[in-house]
Image 1 (cartoon, rainbow, N blue to C red):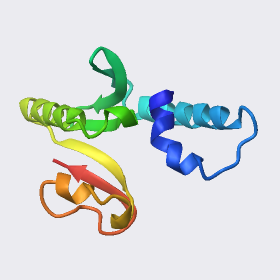
Image 2: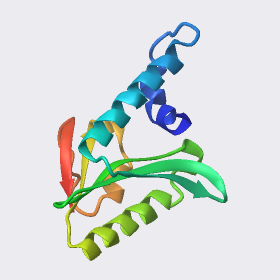
Image 3: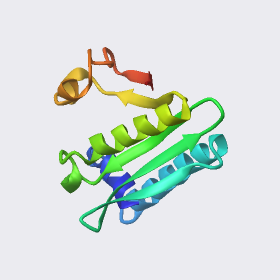
Image 4: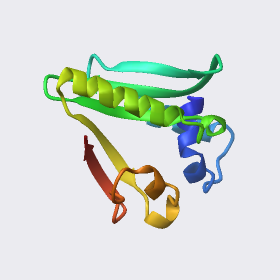
Length: 138
């Protein structure tokens, strides 16, 4: 839950919560996410990412006969910008190539001003021209 909560921190900090409300809301949202992923990909793989033997994040991967789907990837803030996410994506791209399946991920695209580092990391033109959901197919 701490990884999931860290991915929602900025958004949730905008609300004044009564004692226990924030945690209950995060658990509810996490359970909804898990239920959706498990319904679509019942054999999904869920891994805790370890860096220096410390829990640093999570990666959730769904597969079916047509694709490998990156359902979710998240790193705790103190482990971001150290290359772990890039290494995991390269591993997943290699896995998809070996399986001869496309690697797909549905991403929420914030406005370009909200993610200034993103254009330097994306190979090619920035995929998010407008705030929306985007299917990334590699």
